[in-house]
Image (tube, rainbow, N blue to C red; front, side, top):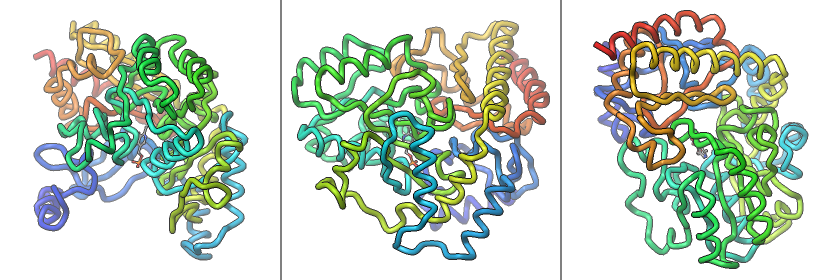
Length: 421
Ligand SMILES: Cc1ncc(COP(=O)(O)O)c(C=O)c1O
């Protein structure tokens, strides 16, 4: 049990033995040796079909040959310079050509940095202080948005983190997702004070909550009417639901988009993209300060270019089909075994909630049977299928999952049989 030993050792030096809370599950997480395609291998010699995929970035699976080749070439030239490189232009051009709202781009190092800077940009541009976010939405681990937050914050019982002064979040207004009346009310009560609405178009950090028909369009219209900027946090949905992300998929174009994950092809990156008139408020052109030693890091940028160029129509067709097949399998199984649950799926994303109600927002998602979900997780794990160890995360398919689909379906059948026992 090398993972167990490593975890004991890790705990001596790393807080809780992990570097991000989502990675922990009881009694200890497995330690990874390597990845290949849709599989990861742990240090104990176990092989898992991976539907976590590092929480989203690895749409081409682990160790894509083209990405590896390009990254190695770049590493030989240098890892970081603190000076511009031509590849930053190339990646920015790809973002601008793919993402409908993107006229200009600023690369940062993570999704967290992207949402933090996007909010600052919206405040700087509008001269307003307040922001609206949705209950349970996770936009990274910074102070403006770590209120009623999803993902690991919710899983590990800290949706409102300690250490964030009231003064910092008094300008963050919370409303339930999919609730047009609540949005209208919040805007009315804070007339001319709201800089932006930040929304994750599909709430992947509370599982997989879909926007109701017309909800995103409603947000677009009301923000336009009220002089509020609409920010789509597409750190997960970007390049996933379409080359142009959720905004292309739903045909609703925000003012600002935040990106990450897939954009770096498995290497750390984030980006803010948007209308030129707004983006030009970032330093050095404008007065909204934004900077970073590793911004536009050449290794991440190289991996991003190599990844984005591989996202052809075939990629979307296949990854969508894989997720749909698994979601339909889950739907059949809950019916067959008469288990109270809901399954949601869009593009290459899917999740099950052990819940009686339709999961349309955070409050309903929280009522899910978490114990049942964790049983489902452990039974899958025992049989070589790895999903994120939380009800409040989303499962993803990659281009390599075709070869593992049949095995996954068989495992799911066994797991449901077991859950019903
Ligand atoms: C929608 C969304 N926004 C922002 C973030 C933060 O990104 P990062 O973990 O790269 O800081 C995440 C991370 O999961 C996310 O899912």
